[in-house]
Length: 328
Picture 1 (cartoon, rainbow, N blue to C red):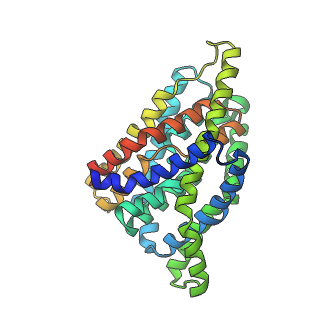
Picture 2 (cartoon, rainbow, N blue to C red; picture 1 turned 120 degrees about the horizontal axis):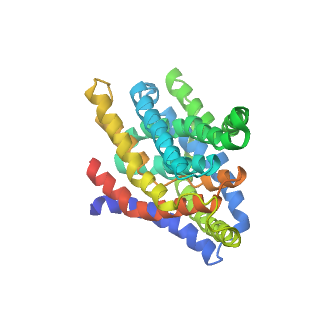
Picture 3 (cartoon, one colour; picture 1 turned 60 degrees about the horizontal axis):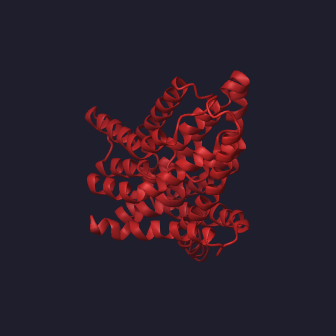
């Protein structure tokens, strides 16, 4: 366990550094969007391209990996939305609760952390999981969020809007280009690849520091939402609390991935044990830090979503190393 903490502690320490930099006014909150731009448009695409281009194409296109993680994501969304709807939560808050409970921080944190823990072979399944969440999980939840407000056509428009946003996201394209490189066997010229490698090296520390700054900014969002709720009717239209969503993310999500993966293996699916470990640990990561911004954009309770992200990140400092120890 000490050896696992020796790997995970620096990652969470960089998140804490970003958080304290904002809380102590050492880093201007106005600079967070620029930091996000650097990570999302430059550093992370280079890192994902590098790993995808160095991973055998059979691991990136392994249907057993795709279907296991896809099935777990769909089941998580269905269960979370059903539970929220039984509690009389509106479609918008129910859908974004499902998204924050089933979308791990696999881009900013997961890929570099899993590679550090398990080696370069972990990059393939982690990238597949990230692609599934960007294309399927987020689009499904955005579509569900609009069912109550605009009916079926509104949900279709929301899904299309989510897909358009995904197409503008450089992360899926960097993964696709990396897949094409490894499938064709044609790599970039050495000087170009070296430049990409240098930029990829900055992705992990920059992304982790950015998570911390976003979490600190989300605290202000939570405080503003709490103040608004206090001024409104404290009973009517209140969504379910954050505790269930935190438990869904750090406990239920990895458990469902493990259960589906074990079932698939027992039925003869060629799912390697090492790939299943990566998928389970990906699901054990804290919630993605960009979900509160999406929730705010679509008019959901962004303060509640931000609280889930913050709490899962804090709790994952202990639960994620425990999951690593159990899976290894």
